[in-house]
Image (cartoon, rainbow, N blue to C red; front, top):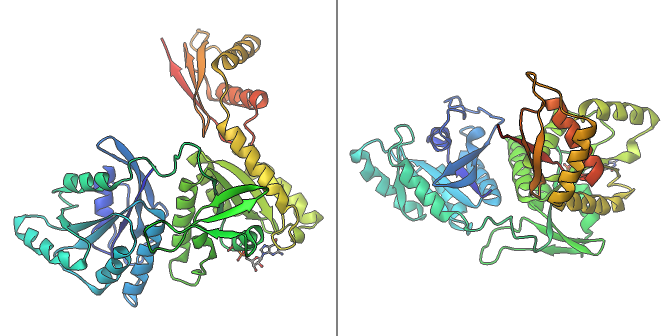
Length: 431
Ligand code: GDP
């Protein structure tokens, strides 16, 4: 989905506007400085178009040095978004922080929509005109709180969205790989090892002056697009709010990718953050390779505990491919490419309808679904509705229980492969 990022300094009403756009009261609106929220992206829809909304307001910089930090926030938004929605408080007018953001946005080469917020009535509408001075074109007056003109604002956002979503290029161009993982697992070390020095091809966006965010890397005779490597290489760990940026980048990189390599520090116990990134990938429908890094530090005892952790904590992604590597020594790094190739092949697989139905007929005859309410549910017809990720639809004559659906998923995987790829099975009940 195309990505719209909402930027602006604290208290201009970003969260209220986000709530207005997603039509829910999900984003926490709090006037507490420094409030950090976990959830920063939302699926939104307007005029029949779906997009992902990223709220950069989850992290509020403190007042000192705010202009610089908020400019950094804008830079992150520019990296991951297709359209930037810049929110300014029209009743306050232009502040230093607003100007710092505007300077970043003027040069970014992406569409920017300037929202003049808190224009609750006709009288304040005049104040919105002062925002022309930001050099970002026409300020669009809006009242996030009362909803005034928010439809017009969304129309403008919609118009600026790329026509064809940039990431569905119909299979042409290099495959897009996201290298993700919590800080210090070895992402930049691995990237350096993979890319070497001279084999890195920088890929600047035509007609813009922004930093290149992706790298084209040739591995095993194939060119791969590693997305958002700028975010990996940049040493912004010391920055306040670095974790927040890291989380946003991870999500952005996954959204833009087709296959994700989730890097894990095998020498340490699995953490919540590792698990959160893994679920982010599987929920996004991308295929996945789990790379257990720092294998040079793994001894027999650690290995024993790691296997236990994997058995216990990764039960929901038994399909993810695993490789044990060391970015430091280079051990088995050459196994990554075959793994991502295999995952992508599974992800793109289409099972012919006739084969699928023949297989399911046999399966159901041998192991019928459990009877519910005295009735025997039947699978009338099945089809794979989509690939990348694979989605199946089962038309049934009654409700199939969760355990039975999981059984079907398991058997479909055994029969048709799908190693490294999530698959989704929907049920449509025909009475
Ligand atoms: P990032 O935050 O994920 O990009 O992690 P870095 O690449 O900066 O690595 C974090 C630390 O782990 C650095 O001190 C690396 O030298 C170290 N490191 C990375 N990969 C390995 C590995 O395979 N083995 C060992 N022993 N150390 C590693």
